[in-house]
Amino acid sequence: MKRAIVAAEARLNLEFVLMLMLKARELEERWQTRLFFDNGKKDAVPVTEVVSILRLCNLRNPELWISSRDEVSPPAEEELAAFVERDFRNLVWDVETGSFRNKKASVDGKLAVLLGLLGDGVCVLDAAAAITHVNEAYSAMIDRSLKIGSSLEHTCLGDMVKQVFASGKTVHTLISDRNTAAQIMATLQPILANGRVTGIISVLKHSDTIQNLSETVRLVTEKSKKLEEQSKRERENRWYPERYVSETPEQKIVRALKPGASFQSFIGMHHTVLEALALAGKAAQVQSTVLITGKSGTGKELVAEGIHQAGPRSLQPLVKVNCAAIPESLLESELFGHEKGAFTGAIKRKLGKFELAHKGTLFLDEIGEMGLEMQTKLLRVLQNSTFERVGGEMTLQVDVRIVAATNRDLEQMVREGTFREDLYYRLNVIPIHLPPLGERKTDIPLLVNYFFKWFNRQLGRDVKGISQAAMDALVRYGWPGNVRELKNIIERVVVLTDEAYIDICDLPQCFHQGRRCDGEETHFYGSITKEEIFPLEKYEKDIIRAALERYGSYSAAAKALGITHKTVAAKARKYGLLDWINHWTLL
Ligand SMILES: Nc1ncnc2c1ncn2[C@@H]1O[C@H](COP(=O)(O)OP(=O)(O)OP(=O)(O)O)[C@@H](O)[C@H]1O
Image (cartoon, rainbow, N blue to C red; front, side, top):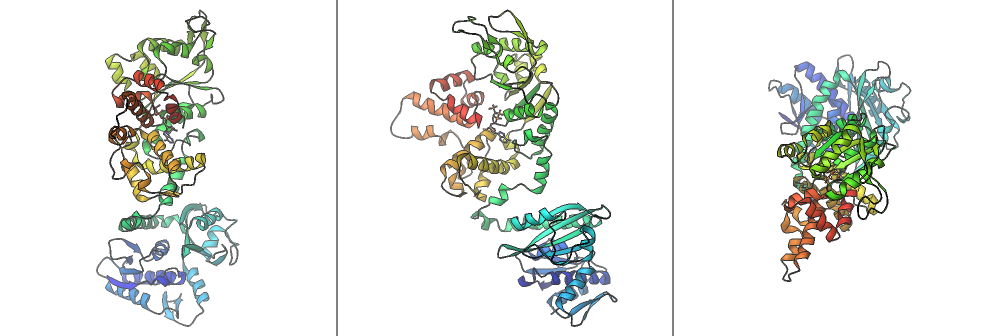
């Protein structure tokens, strides 16, 4: 391996890059080898790949090694290294001999010749987005009228140019050759000076070179991973608004594939989420009953809303009933309505949720909390769409689409005899399962970004980003309360911070050393360790509130506290915490 220095000042010099490539091609042919740029580690980039060299030249490390990797062609390495170290101002390419020779030539003229020799299309833009260099291959593929001084604005790359100037980031995209319609990979790479975009180098490659390109992409990806690891310590103290707040182009494409706008607010790219949403999208188009399962806070209600909005009933009402929040004795009248005088307190006729949802959708949340008696009555409506109001004799017929949700294991409940088997099969026509957040950790940064933007808007704040360490702590955490818990925490952070950037110390205490949040760190435990002892009810209220805050539903809070959901609901009423659950659930 021969060492050569590609000096920092040379790294944006297009002429140098092109000469290097041509020389490398000449040597590769002559010595029947392949030459690579190496940074002394195992990653290497083919010297003849214009995109990869441009990328490499933009890296900070100015020292590059040249290697042939096959150990038998030291002369090729030697020659290329000597070439790099040579004063190449007076070299020109001799088309006849296919090699460089010494001759005085104007720099611009030489560059034009070099560009003309390339099979790849190359175009250089200045800070005003005007073309300073463009070769024949480029204009043939894009637009023959391109010339020095004109711009790419009217071409298919116009938007990409704006994007690169705005973001300072390289963009890759696939376009079609205007003559042959063949696929072309277009790369637009910013030319950066002191962090400012002072121009763009754009390279076009035909798809027959895409294999090479994918090798390059693989190498560059490996390389950037390595560099990322190397600079991890340095990054700890830097802010990363961009790394976590932006979707990658691939993610944007995947998001666009989500079934319709109705599911756009459901954030997540994990394959389990995309599969669930694809199923929900299909379910929206038919009238079959849907059963959405998943732990509390995984977004079941959001999916139910998406199903309603994406389907033909979207202009009709979506009526929601939380079966756990309504005492069993009132649930029948809530669902089916009652006639005046049906029971004490029934001072006038009241329409039930089934009637209110006529032609629309009825969302039965926490269906697993419904008692057996009500299950029987519900089954009858599902079977023949008819029911009577409580205290009424008239049989009413409705056209309602049912979407049910539960965080309970209904199959297990069927085995235990607490859920009717026939009702279970009636509901479970299209089952959709949402995985807990802890099983799709790759979605956490996307959700964090989404909620920062959301609460910035809602609360008129301007949190700009989050540190690597804080994001790592959020990703490490187990999220027993799933997305709801994450959303609550981000809201609190946005409300409480005065900083533009969130660091780990802005997160609740439990994230500071990667420990799980547990009871020890809640407001309640803080109170009990004080010297003063409060009435028992004060602690009870704190505990119920903490559980509702974290889990957002009666049944999940009840499970965590080891009591029944009815007890939680009753205590929430007693302590005036109903707003609390509604607040979090509605967010
Ligand atoms: N993937 C997601 N993208 C954006 N927001 C989400 C997502 N999942 C959940 N949320 C938000 O988290 C909160 C809880 O979601 P939702 O009420 O749909 O959960 P759930 O599974 O129905 O919970 P529960 O079983 O407790 O009723 C809501 O504010 C919802 O908007």
